[in-house]
Picture 1: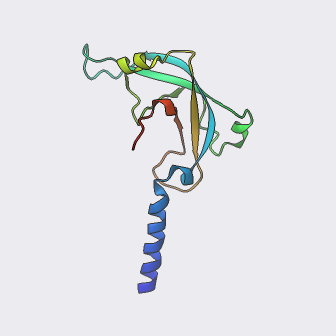
Picture 2: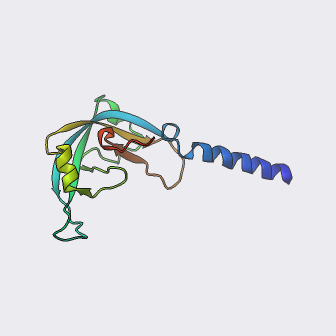
Picture 3: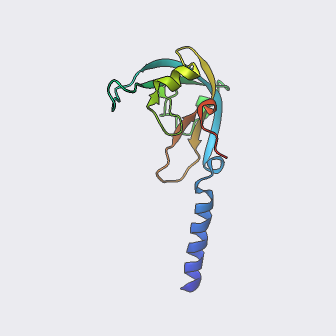
Length: 135
């Protein structure tokens, strides 16, 4: 009984060590984010004080054959909402300050979960230029 508990604890520890490691859980597809829409958000918690924007892009893989190899092909590459550090509602001042507008292109990545279960999304996108760098 004691050895069975130790085996379970060891397995749980191994899972925990890799659970937060993006490289071990996701496969990255390099590409470009083409901004297709920048509009005022319907999210308006402080009317007249702060304006939030919604930004959408199309993801264009660097390798044109990449979509045929997607693990999760049902997750589309078009009209993807830009999230920055897990936030989808972006301050208008920030959007304007970064010069984000329709037609601009930025290096981007599509991340696809390699397998397994859990609460993490099967696919997410990242535009590294906009992510906050953590020490």
